[in-house]
Image 1 (cartoon, rainbow, N blue to C red):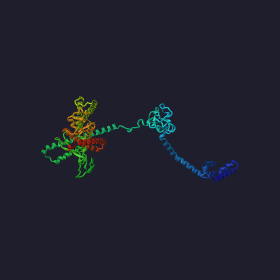
Image 2: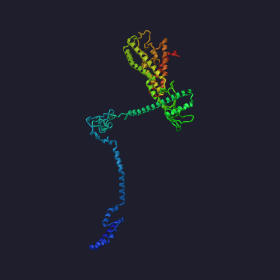
Image 3: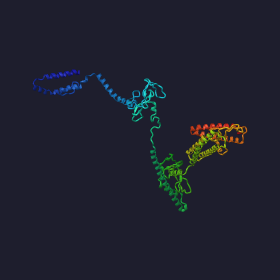
Length: 574
């Protein structure tokens, strides 16, 4: 329809131009006369007004040329444009993700050809030979097309596909370089042995300097606070001394107590401004609510805060102002909170700790010296025993035998002192749970040391037996005991040799001395059994399972020896 109307309009315009007279002047006048009608030209499609035919033709060509396209094709084209617009950002995201893949770094593909080989040296590679197997110790595969054949880029050995599929950054000299290297194919051993692979600490950073800086600030702040409170304490002491002198000088010391108390309170408030009672409902230290009867309010004379009775205490005012215990020089008492009290006497307590060595430290130093002496003598004694056995020396009058006996006596004396000092440490008076735990641990460690070193050395064994022809009394020499006090000083560890309990051969006719020795040994074993049971209970409570295993083993050995001794004594033991 639109094309037909366009052709009709064009034909009408042509006929109009042809009907004009040939006379130019007349044509011009006619065109001039009909200019009003030409100005009324309009587009037959959109009715837009046009000035001339040329403008109308151009308008038809530019604006209405595609109007004949089928609407179906237009809809398809619109969908295609919309799809391309939507897929454009998605394709960009896909490309970014693909670039982040692990196998894209440095253009290295573990399943394909190692493109980084051209940057890394190959001088250390092994030459290819026939019938070669994988260099991995746990693999015996033949290297071929099926199993693969690869040179480790670091060590140069041949490996199969399974044992040379890891990647590691190497520099041009085939050394590990995690910063500037190239990803290359390496074997399992080279990958595991690289620097930093087995590190478990990770990245560490020292915070000591930061800690020291903040700690120094805290110490300076604590010192300033302590000095300020000490000055207030001195001022309060002067106030009390002045009031005592005034009371003694007026009325022969018969001044009304209420007046003196009021003056003292006013003087205290002049030194430290007290906090208003009405503005405080809870104790600032324990957060307990105040009451009129049950939990009364008190003012700290050093900081002025309102506190409860539990969080405050009275400290004496001494002439030296450095003692928290009242003495004959005390001129009165003031109430202070626990924070101010700790700040005032912290420096004094620190100086006392430095000047005076605690008893546990003194005893532990002695214990350490004795242990050093034992550690230096014990190897010599063991060498003597080996020498006696190698030379078959059984004569007690021999010089080497006497020297070994003296060493044994010296060791037993040291063990006795060691055990006595450890008991003294455990029995010291403690003022805190940490001190009690420290002393118990020292005592437990000392007992373990005695069990490990004392048991094999309680007696000096005779390594050899005399010939029965030379033994006139018909008895065998198993052991001999020196009649000294050192062996009886620690009965709890007697009758042990070579780390195992020993048994004495009992004859039918026992002497009184032998029976008494057996009784003492049995009593010692019973005492040791009791102590070990206590140690086991303590170790169980503290969850020290390593010590518990050792203690249980020792307890089993003690019980076996107790049964043997009771069997030897028979009816002699009640």
